[in-house]
Every structure is written in structure tokens, then in C-alpha cells.
Length: 400
Image 1 (cartoon, rainbow, N blue to C red):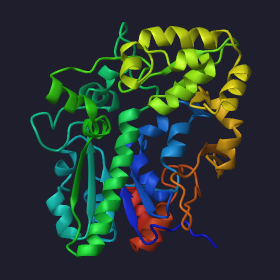
Image 2: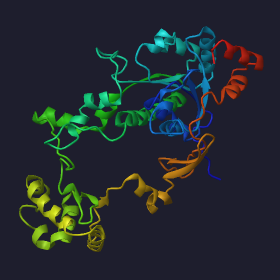
Image 3: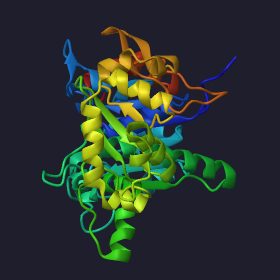
Image 4: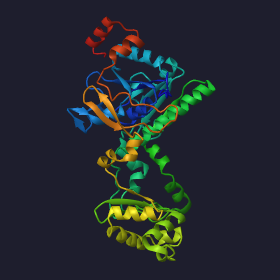
């Protein structure tokens, strides 16, 4: 029987809020880590109130905080600090995405936490990192997208820089954070030298993803500009509209793929045209080639286009799908990329499945984001050894 517990016996404290920190912890929870999410007793994670909502419940929260236990704890209260230290002493990883300085003001600097648990791995996610002249500047995902240079690259030449249609910086940083934590867990086990601090800036996650503009400027003194849906390194690469109003993205950047595509839509006359014969020529004459491809697409329906391209062995394209399309896509469904989870508040809900796919330890979505403080009793009695009477008293004192 396949096991989902690739991170079994790994305990993570999730102090993150809204997206980057919680999503990072959720990625690790997908593969069996025990994730204890700590929220403020009053309102909890602001992500609970992030739209879209149903029946007053934040749907984004349900996905970003799946496979977690929620407990409430007031870290400004002395008793709350003591309980937190107890949890730190028994955990492997701590994730936080507060503004730099918040943890220190609470009395939980890296040095203090390391003295409590020398094996602790701490991930700190912030807009600009924990060091440097801008470390204390407030920043959210969109700030990081702008600052990183990635927004400047996105959009059309005659339009403004465009943000992605989702929280790109937060999502990429969540992946980078999970990557960093797994590396640190591996290093800790291999070298037996204890835990370490991981300092992750939102803008740096994006800069690492988009490498070529830096070397282009360094070597050529050229700033890479917006080019819409084209690709800087090859052509034809663009998005075209069909006769029946569908959008297709074509990606045929190499000489081999481009030749097959051009043979399919225009025969040898187009494929071996000196203007389009190799990649350098196609990039130089991208405007002229775009006119040809655009007209060819506009005169045919999606069904006609797909039939031609498949017959000519030139399927270097994809229909631009919306979310409704994904729900009926056989490829998506066959790979369980949308899964159903039973939720106490909303009933059965669907969300993205597990990525990546492991052959022996595939991971599993067991629960959606929990109710606020849903696991107080379980965590505080079993893990911290508190009595029922103590829990009642802590609640009265607004500690939990």
C-alpha cells in the first residue's frame, strides 16, 4: 500500500498569515508533515477573510491551510509565550512571514529560539529579506513583483506593466520556502549539526526564476522590454484567436518545431521561406510571421486547427483554458489534479491536487483549512500536557 507520509514525524509550526507562509506549510503538509497553525484567538489569520467567500468562509484559506491543525495562542501574553516555547522545543520547523522585527519584539529572535531547540529550522519570509537597507520596509506580493523586475517584463509593449492574475510572488516564495526547508531537513539529518535559519525575500524568489534579463544587461547593456505573449528567444511563440473565438497559445521556438508548424499551416513555401528559415530570421521577422499565423488562425475554427496540426504532427500549442474548462478536462481529471475534500463548514469542496506525483509516497489532501482553534484541545492536552481546567483558565485569560 502506498504511503503519503514522506515527511512523517516532521512537526511544523506555522505562524504565517494570508498566503506565502501558510501556502509553504501547506505544501509540506501535503506529504505528511504535522502542521500546527497558530492563530490569534480573536480573528485568526487574516487569510480567513480573504475573498472569494462562501457563507462568510474564505475559500482561499481552505486550500492554503489544508492538512493542518489550527490552535489559537496569544503570543503577547506571558503564559502564551511559555506555551509557544514548549511547542518550539518539540518541533522541527517554524515558519513565519511577519515584517522583520516582529518576532524579536515578541522575544523570539532566532538566537532565543535556537537556545530553546538547537535542531530547529526557521523559515523567515519577508518582502525584502531580514538584512539590507530596505529590510524593514512593508511589502506584499505585488510590491515584490514590481521590485523584482518581473512586472516590468509582463504585458504588451504599448501598455503598462501587468501583474499576474494571481499572487505570483507569494506562490513562488511558498515553493522556494518549501524547497529551502526540505534542503535544511536533509542537511540536518546528514551532518548532525543542528538546525539553521532560512532568510527568504519575496522579490528574490522571482529574481531567481527570471534569469536572462540580468545576464543580458550585464553582457549587452540592454534592458529587456515587454513583448506581450511572444518569447525573447524564438518564434512563432504567441497567442492567437480562432474563427470561433477561442484562444490558442503556440510555442514553436526551435528550428525543428517551427518548421513542422509552418509546414502544417503554409507548406514548404512558408517553412523554407528565407525570412523564416532559421530561428534568428524568424525573430528578426516576427511581425511579418505573426500576420501570417494570425490570419491562418482567424480563418479556421478550433476543431479545424487541431485536426490539421495533429495530422501534420505539429501539436505545439494549447487552448487557453479557463477554470470551467479545467473541471471537464480529461487530462486534469485523470491525473487527479482536482480533488474533492470533505469540509465541516462547507461540505464537499474541490481544490488542486497533489504536486509533484511520487510513485511510492504520493501525498494526500486529508482535510481542508480548519476552523479557528479546532485543534486546541488535541494539541494542548496531548502535546503540551495541559489539563482541562488549565484550558478553561487559559481561555478566560484570553491566552487561547
